[in-house]
Image (cartoon, one colour):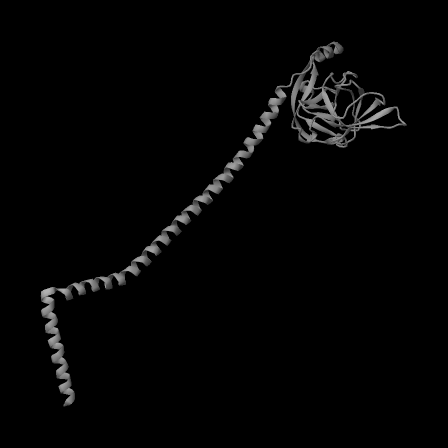
Length: 282
């Protein structure tokens, strides 16, 4: 019974409080404003994390998609660069070839001589493979004959050893069987250039011990012997050895032409060679 009375009292008290609040709110509208504000805060607190998470996920996905696109573009660019590099190789080769040909075309042969252009096909081929030699792509059909000088704009390479209709073998001055009469550019010291079977070093022999010569001085063809015209650069002095027991100096020289990178050459031909040959045939 006591519990029922206690419950009725609380109900009456709550009802009175309710009536007071309703009356107060009808005049001031405080409760309505409070409810509206609290409801908005509650709704915002519930929705904001979801919106933030959605934005972050969307941003991350867009960045990922953009990154994938950039990677694909990079792959395509790398492939294009590789293709361009491959396409560039023959262009570089052509440019280098044009530069070499330009230098050959600028060569001015000595008076009384003409020249024929030729390409180097291979080194040490056939019965002459024991010699320092190479094969060129012109022969007797193009007017090439034995002992014709062969050179580049940098200097003398050698002479024609033998010919066929369309090809010729050239004996290099680096071969131990080669002999070229030479003279130094400054002191006019004469000697005989001899190969040592090396593309880097040659020797000039029969230079008198008293003949003046400087390291770095260039040797030219002397014109003696009737094969090579006078004045073609051949080799540069790198070492001078004096032997007290000998009447001659030993001169170590280096070729002025680069034997390691020969692709095109010039074959010198006398202007009157054809007419002389015709006279001999008659």
